[in-house]
Length: 379
Image: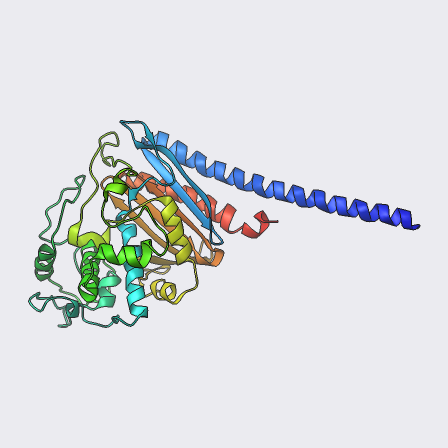
């Protein structure tokens, strides 16, 4: 074969490789486009079927925000559309932040899991003891095994109506009303009250408000500019109007949880939550502390610090998860550390069960078609 023919074959091979590369790139973009279209179909059909006002979705993969978009209305009355910077109240996803803050302070040796919780409260506050006469520890309150009630007995509230204030003095009084008739640290018993107590303990330990701690240690370093524990004037301009779970056409109000804020008061957007998810997916000492399995709930579910740790048999991987559901808002956070992927979904409706169905459908597509196939999509 002569040199001229060899050069022609070589040139053809280069051209063919370029075509294949371009085709692969085109298919990768097309594949992701199709996946996002499936996710959007679930969101839009869910809004229509269940009369949701709005839903916002954020997806991260390999340290990048690959998707952030809103659907429906942030404000039905004024026809204000929702977007990636629209602000929602997170409800119990707030506990993931409280757990992260606790993990930071443990890493810095500012406190210990085994410390008696009473150590971080005034001596005048009489803490309950369990069946064996032991005072509750930091670990027990953080893992929902302290046998504290879901809400304090001195909080008067009605389902469908937002909490509007609960003082630190009321929280101290609520602690003294707790009666524990079983050994602590054994049984999982979910408690919003417990995470309010934990947040207050961290305030007392540091001499700073929980709002200051979140801002200085999490929001500001991560540039989460539309996130705060309290509803500031700035955030009000981005806020999605909340609608009742029993009547999604009727407007309600955001919660103001006061001393219980560590359980559910944070306001944030999907863009900001994507920044937080990317931080949680890093291999750091704080994340290892927070995402460890501390309390076994059942065969596959355990509780870490402000997050569920799931040894998923169906997906054969570790899952970090928490949801939130308060009157007027719901949220869904899920991370797959092995695949470096995460998903956040927020809504301004308190219809938690219906929202859960939508979120799980989106999660299934994100995991099976995006996270698991990440390497294939990049070819």
